[in-house]
Length: 77
Image 1 (cartoon, rainbow, N blue to C red):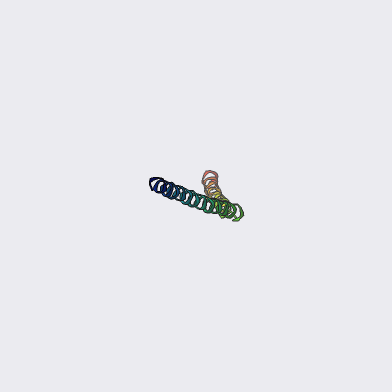
Image 2 (tube, helix red, strand yellow):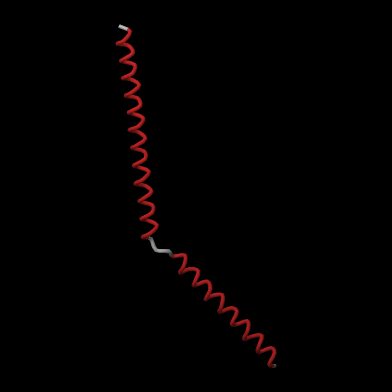
């Protein structure tokens, strides 16, 4: 009778370990798929920030050119 109880306990422990391992594998696969999806999304989406920065640079240059023209007019008069 004692041996049967030990066998049942060992089977319970083994099945619990297998369940934990299965859960870890499922979580790992889901994490891997999510990571790949994020990497593909970031690779395929265009970077609009570069376009915006170029616009700002050109826009600022126009103001500085106007300031130089005004300074030249003051000096020549």
